[in-house]
Amino acid sequence: MTVPRLIACGLAAALLATAAGTGAAQAGEVQNACAADLQKACPDAKPGPGGGRWQCMKAHLGEFSQPCQSAIADMKAKMQARRAAAAAAGNGAAPAPAS
Image 1 (cartoon, rainbow, N blue to C red):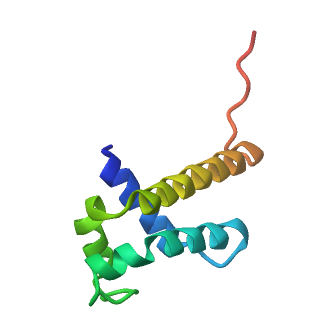
Image 2 (cartoon, rainbow, N blue to C red; image 1 turned 60 degrees about the horizontal axis):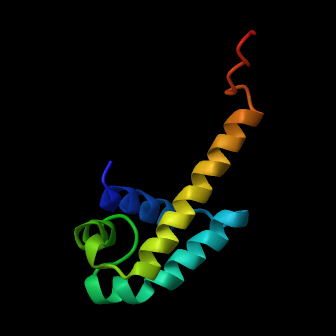
């Protein structure tokens, strides 16, 4: 998977994050870090279904600032860690191999 694609996935997750716990805080960090980039690259795009923001962001992702890309990457890593921890705590955890 390419870096722009990973960043796009992280950005999508940030924009779709709910207002629950750490997810909201991370989404807020991404929004703060990326607000100027979004305004510059996608000034007429509207958030939400059919608004065109997602398509515009994907098209201009390489133009986003380093702080924005770093915030997206950080949020993506934290979300992956939370998912892994949740899977390990639930029934999705693989049994330890027999010695």
